Length: 318
Image (cartoon, rainbow, N blue to C red; front, side):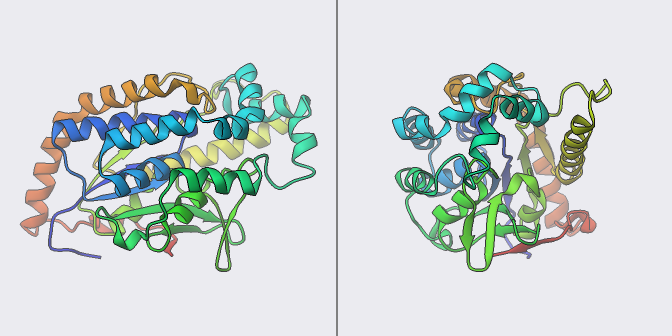
């Protein structure tokens, strides 16, 4: 899609609690006078980006997210996983899985129900947090990346209920229940495209600022200790390599320095917010310079906003 007006897109990754750094990114963008014309997000990035598309003010989004993570309903929803995660540390999915499996958490829960958080609780969380607007009616264009459990395809939701779109994009498999939309069964988009730069370009973005808050697998310099660890490490490495490839098309890539913060440590909202602000501030000169250059070259007809097709990979809009 090509549009006459030059568009800047903000792409926000998944990352669970680590994705709270997106709050600082949005606040700093506002204070620095950097306007975005489109937001595309995955998982936590879809949640925060979607709320920003609705309210248009970072301070309101921060307040809504803070109220969410401090609520009793949210605490009950994440406590089973968060308590175990605090003991295990943030050392990759394999280590979390094996620790939880040994303690019986996944063994007992995953064998008897499809998700650790019930469908009713998840629906109530989304209802309390997200006004049920139509994406087409939002003042700021928005899309959420998801994955279809049935086909494995990346599905980008750019119309319809924003509450459903965010709920689907944030539905971590095994923890949150999948969301049915039509014939599709949708889950967390991070498994297909954790930094959805390509959908942003396909929606008409000429300049893309991408933010990646994920934690890569630790200990890659050491050999796996078991056959099962080999399997899980390969799975995570595949996701890492895919994400590296996908986010390479961004004009500016921002990676907030959050350290080894656990994906379940939602109490660290202020730490994440500060990290996001600092990361944006460090990149502000690069953003302004590159945006001016690309804007001039694009509007002069010297380059195509699709960047010679390097953004193309299989996904479908819904």
